[in-house]
Amino acid sequence: MVLDEPVIWLLRLGFTALALGAFVSFLPTGRTFLRILPTYGFAAIGAAALAAGAAVDLARGGTVRLGALPLLPGLGGLRFEMDALSAYFVLLIGGLGASCSLYAIGYARRGCGASLAGGFWNLFIASMAAVVLSSDALGFLFMWELMSVVSCLLVMAEHKDPDVRRAGYVYVVMTHVGTAFLVGAFLWLYVWTGSLEFSAFRAVGPSLPTGVHNIILLLLTIGFGTKAGLVPLHVWLPRAHPAAPSHVSALMSGVMVKTALWGVLRFAFDLLGSGPAWWGGLLVGLGAVSAVTGALYATQQNHLKRLLAYSTVENVGLLFMGIGAATLARAGGQGELAVIALAVVLFH
Image 1 (cartoon, one colour):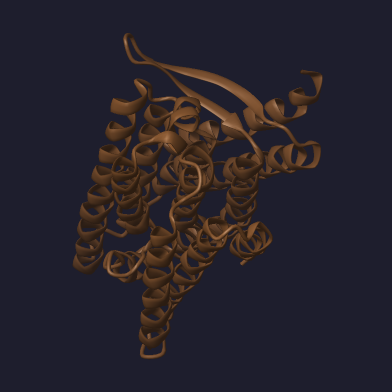
Image 2 (image 1 turned 180 degrees about the vertical axis):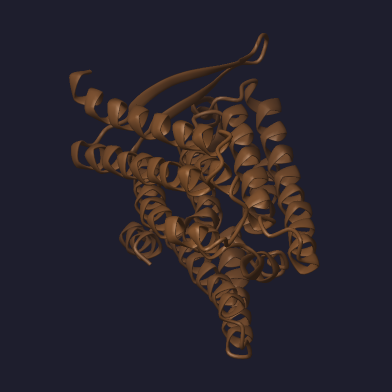
């Protein structure tokens, strides 16, 4: 459709600029600043273009199919599309990514972090956007893993410090534990649908047997909860955030953990139909524990980044409480209350 073209072109511009930024960071040059300025400059342009495309899509409404990215023969391609939920999260990723990229220029000029980290920074923004644009499980897992790997490399940018290396090891272990649970959930869905496309999950998900539905929800809760930093799966977060460069820490706390929130919302309120009341109660309980734990630990910190890390744990807990409350309201037939709860989650 003609109305889709501005969105598609803005997204193409965004991903192209991010690819150029990643490429420039690896060019051999005698002066580090000749890499820093274009690397993070392209990142800011690319992130801003993604945010603009998302804003246009939110204004016009509807779903934009972005096509498929070829992968390997026999595996098909990675499919992407933008609907209202994806557009909202791309808007957050692009907006914060652009501002953090501008800050990163000065941060990198002071010699903070490895100069090649700029390439990973561009890939980090692109992979987060691609995660929430994914419309099939294969594409989602590919981009989820790319996001996890490049974020780990960014955390370990100052790898000469043994504490930084230790934080990176804990992070990479925990993120792959979470990914393993997500793979398990997708395999269960593949067995029952015969497909890895989200459209097939959406068609069959609400009619899954109760036991299978519950198992998949538990696997997804652990998988996404690990990335979000939900207690007791948060052990990586207070270690990784203080170790990461400041702009990386800001983007991880501000939007990376929110990709897990996107996953919970996508599956619980879209692909699998309405979640049961017990699951809503579980999310409220886990969220409450996370909120209280994060707040208590935050008050005891004298390291600013660690304080912000525990603040992230607290706020993630509040968000999961909101999702749980929306699930309980929906299960009880209180649609208006569910909408209010979800609005609070999205605008928190």
